Length: 318
Length: 316
Image (cartoon, each protein chain N blue to C red):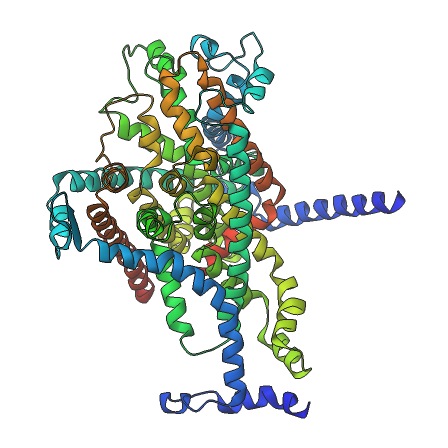
């Protein structure tokens, strides 16, 4: 028992200060290490089996080609050059970039507007509205796409009747020109509440005395919002840009489901994930699909790293 | 009896106190020097966006009571007779067009979400505690790899998983759905942050001095303190699996194994030419039945997810 009593002291003494010393760790530190390893091992095993191994296998597969005659053979980067030269694939990438480039700023502006209202308490029944706005987060995207499909249905949808009543006849929310704007509306419906709650929590953590001082200086409210609150929640906004961008790049469910209400607009290559799905699963070109998945993963990671780098630089400047 | 009424009383008291404290913490609106009518105008904005948010939900509730012809023929935002709710509800338990039975899909969704969610929570709690309170060889590298996993969403892993499953015969296997649902890197990240903020090192060291084993320290000291964070991770991972579409779409070809999302996707594809099967009412009511448990769960556990979302934004 006296040995256990010494443990914390031993830990302080043997805490490694140089890399050379780290190799000679005390029995105590080794035991600690084993315990720590035991705690993280279950997660690491499943994580390796489910994420690392399949991704590795996909990269491996993407270097091979199966031909009708001759079977499967190593083809180097042939699949990758096919993906990189595919106009359809890049067309899909550009489409989701346009989608995200409009949807994310508009949604964040709306979310920030309401988060500010709730934070300042300048509207009645704030808690009630906060709860209502969060409801779509609990609706699976398949279900919300089905609901919106009914609402926007070109022949029977109530929103179509609405446009008719306003004077736009033969209006089609799901036509080729309006499919992206319609999906933007749906995505704004789905995600504004979630973004709003996160911005609201971030705004709540702005110190009260800063705002009070500004009010005592007779600073107009809009200036308090733009000059004090907005900069203080910038980390939360950048995190949201990052999360929403990753989400937008994977656009899949909404166009797939809406296609059942208006056939012919959403093609097999409409978004990168639809392209990957139809290539790998529907057409059975596993290796080409795997190469596409790898390329899209690289694009997503590059965007993420760029936005994290942006955040790091901002923080460095301050 | 009296005990119950006293606790109800104190709970009401506490809620009142919290509300007063919140009001005291807020800056009185009068101080902002707003023009008259601003509060009314902003409240109107809130009402308009609330109408936009509630419109599809209201549409689903109203139209879950209609016949197929009334769903298309009558005004979308008001009821029409006959009242078909119970008839359609009974049809949720039948295989009406050969695609499968909604009730069966619903049970699958519950099974996948609960087992995946509980598994994910157990792994995240253990792993988060391990990374937060222990230093061991490779811990930094492992954690960096998991953070990288945050950037690779399940949609992108789905096709690689399919290729790997084809190799190890996990296509059309329940485990092929449950195991990936247990990998929630963001859950581990949240739990690590939570442990660092809420469980002092001194507390654990004190228990070690008293000779408690690491397992005992975890179960008796750390775990009770981790419950609020744990509930957040449970909620997020259950909701994540509940909503998952692309993974089950890819790995299941047996309709009996579908979760609700894939089943409804299939129905929406077939509803247009299902003839007499009348799939549209089922699609509407099925959607309603799918979202009610999730909204109830979020409402019941709202103090947890609020805390958890806060954690996510602060931690970043």
